[in-house]
Image 1 (spheres, rainbow, N blue to C red):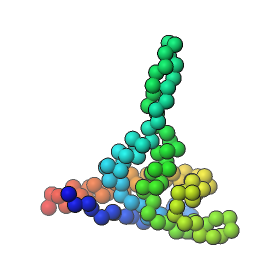
Image 2: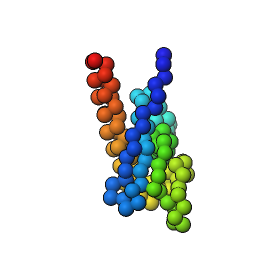
Image 3: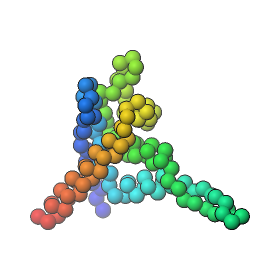
Length: 127
């Protein structure tokens, strides 16, 4: 089995005067499954006097894993002192808190990239 090279797409933050951008990585199906599975947290609740296990999705864990897996590089993100922010986990959370809908936007861009990539792969298999 040959491991394929990672596929990357550069996307620009909409309506950003600094033209901030993110290079996103195509999330292969196995990575998407891993994010879903690792984001699951076992909890329990009491029902009819008995403890019942529940499997719940931890949005926080899923978001952190998503950022880690999908962001390759970025540019144009600066801290309050105009220093360039590096593309690293602590800064992912900072940017997500400061930029409204950053996670949702990145998720949407990733989903579009997945569809584009998989359509392209289907097309090349047909040739």
